[in-house]
Structure formats: structure tokens, C-alpha cells
Length: 416
Ligand code: DSN
Image (cartoon, rainbow, N blue to C red; front, side, top):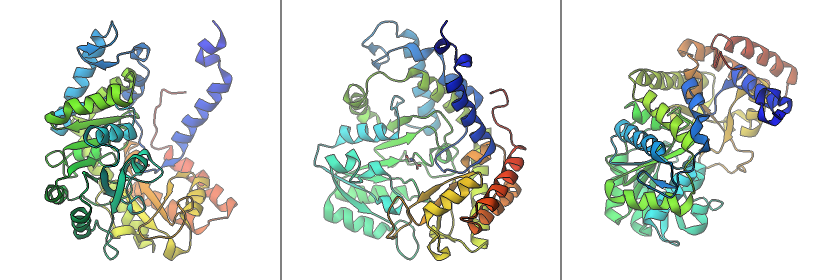
């Protein structure tokens, strides 16, 4: 057997894998869109289904030998429908972007209008940004947050919708720390005859646990990734009303994707099964408690939180009053063993690559078992690192303390 057929003998690749495992083990993972999957999900990702093609849907496949793939997909769809109370589920999207793309294609024609949340106000690239397919193929208009409260400006949303008559309104965001008023979105969409699509990628775990209002009763289509607060494998999913199910399915396959990643669908089934267990609710409650504690600590240290706090798993810090850029903060935190990301804050003028904000999330640390008192320690590390931006020595010393601290919360003990 050549060394390329035995992973343990592939030194080059092993070095990369063990360095990544060490990075995930020894650093504070605070990117709001990441998490640590269970060992069961991890194992499921590498199941035997990686070998199988299954273009099509259960009972309508283009290849033979799909009887087990059918059972798998039917089971996964059923778990998704049960968890979110949805009429129809498509579990094939490879990612959130393809879930959004297929959703648009099922209800829009090129040149139709999308009304989405401004990227600079917390929205997502696929909600109409000019650099994304969504901004290239469709006409796009945006709503955002109010300058005074930094909550979504629902009045402006209604005015823009009235004026622009969008074909679809997209609710959902990547850097918005507050609850979203879905009944209000529905009312606005009804008034202008638009579809309502909700991208709940960031908060779908909170929705599953009943800690964030469910968009399902209000939206025509709900998309999500499966790897953020939902704590599954990297991938996407679409939930919709039965009436749109066929159109959505056709746009995923053959519309924009080929064969489904069945091994990822196995892992989605595992994660959905985990999310149906009662302790998933306790986990999500702790995610929010931890995040609120983090927000409180950062504000207490003088940092300005966009919207003044959080209802969710993430906070967004406006660094402008502190005289630091998002990029400088991200680099300093990285040196201190804290993984985060710079982020635009509403109404800022800085380039996206520099940005004036810092986005922090607690989903991953909560999976490791951190509670509020531990978040106090984490907050102190962050505050100290931001104070010593540019001082490599000091940041390195913080990193050593971070590494020491996080050993109390082991992950993947059997992995090497
Ligand atoms: N890239 C994701 C995030 O970090 O929020 C959104 O898809």
C-alpha cells in the first residue's frame, strides 16, 4: 500500500492535521459562525457514504444502488422537519450560499429585485451584495439598522419595500446581535406582494431550542447552514412550505448542484438528532448567557457594543471610540491565542478589509463547557490583549496563559 493510502504514514498531511487539532484545542475559538461538532458528527462525516453518488431525490435517483441513500435522506429530512416544525426540508445544499441561490432561483427571474439587509449593517454577501451572484443576477436594494438604536429600522424597511416593490425580502444576518421581528417582516412582505425568505444560519440552533422566535410560521422559505449554532457538519439546508418544495428541490438538483454529499448528510442527521435531545436546549441557553456575560464585561471595560448588547450568541464591538481598527484587534487577539474576526459596524467608513468592529461569539466555547465565571476569565484575556496591541511579548505571555486555562476544557480526547 502506498503511503498515500495510509494517512498515518503521510507525514506532510499529518503535520497539517495535528497542527490544526492543536490550534482548535489550544486557542479560544470565538468566531461567531464556528463551533465544535460532537465526535459522533465528526465520525459521521467520514462514513462509507462518501463513496456514493445519488443525484436526484429518494425514489427518483439517476443511479442504481441508492436504496440506503434513500433511507438516509428520508430520515434526515424527517429530523429537520421535526426539529423546526417545517412542512418540507431539503438537506442537500452543500453550503448556505447554495441554499440561498437555489431559493432565489425557485422564486425569482434574473433582474427581479431582492430587498436584503445591508452587508455593512450585519447582512450577508448572498443577500444582495454586489460582489456576490445575488447582486450580479438580481437588482438589489437594502434596509439596515437605525442610527440611534442600531436595531433594524422596520419603518425604513416598510418604506423601501413600498417604493421598490421587491420580489423577495430577505431577513437574517451574520452580525446582528438582536432578535428579529418576523411577524413585522411578514406584514411588510404582504403589503408589497413579496416573498419572505429568512436566512437563519447564525441563529438556527437558538431557533431549534426555542430561544429565538421561529421564522417558520412567517417565511415562505427558510435557509440555514448546519455548522454554526446548530453544531452540525459544514453544509446547508432549506425549509419551506410544501407548495414551494418541488421548485426548491429542482433548483438544488439539477438546478445548481450535482450529487449530494451523502457523508455530510449522515452528519446532518446526527446533528439534527442531537438537537432534538433536551440537553441541546440547556446548551443553547448557556450560549446566550455566556454571550450576555461577555457583552456585559466588555461594556464594563469601556467598549461600545453595537445595539448596546445582545440577545443571541454574538456581540459586535464598535472599536472606533477605542481608537483601534478591527484588523488590529483581530491580529492582536490571534497572537494572544484568541480566534475572532474583524467586522464592519453600521455606518462606518473604513474598508471591509480593515473594518472598525470586532465580532465575538460564544457557541464554540460553550460546547467546551465554559460557564459565565469562565467567560469572565476569557473577557479579561480579551481586554488585556486589546490593551497590548502591537506588544508581541505581552501578547505571547497572554497566549501562554490562554493555553494553560483552556486545558481544563478538553475537546476530542481520542484524536491525535
Ligand atoms: N461566513 C459566515 C459568518 O462568519 O458569519 C456567514 O456565512
